[in-house]
Image 1 (cartoon, helix red, strand yellow):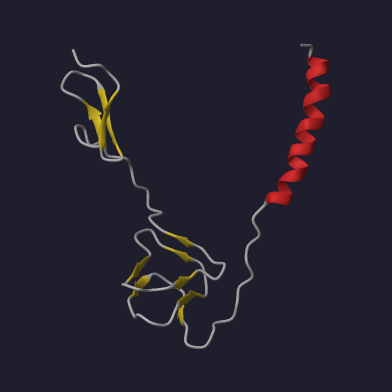
Image 2: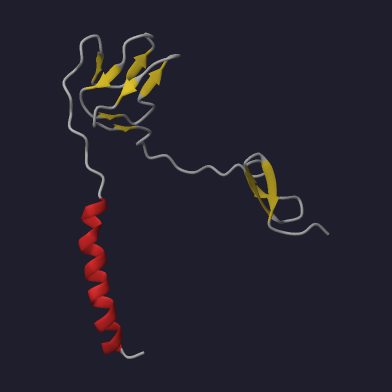
Amino acid sequence: MSKTKILRIGFPLATFMFSTLSLFQCKTPEKRSLPEGSIPISGPGNYDKAGPAYMLTDDIVSGKSAVFLGKDITLDLNGYTITYAGGNYGHIPNSGFEEGVGDRGQRLSIQQMYTHSSAKRL
């Protein structure tokens, strides 16, 4: 296929695809005022009072765990986001359990509590 033919087909197709992307974008919900009885949250913490809903009043960013919720807790994000574990964590391989190399040199990984091997047993 010639370069000109590819451009004649590809350019209009790409233009159409990129122009329609905005139709399918998720819209950020509008922030609501705090309903009566709701408990405002604006930072990381432990939230365990059952009953009224907790509602974010700002984005929460934490390098560690951000929010600890107790039992039967409702958390309304209210259009905000929670970003956690943003630290510079590296991957530490666990050879022999979740991933690693088996006793015969095959690559292993555990998927949904089953052991999977990429090599056949001898």
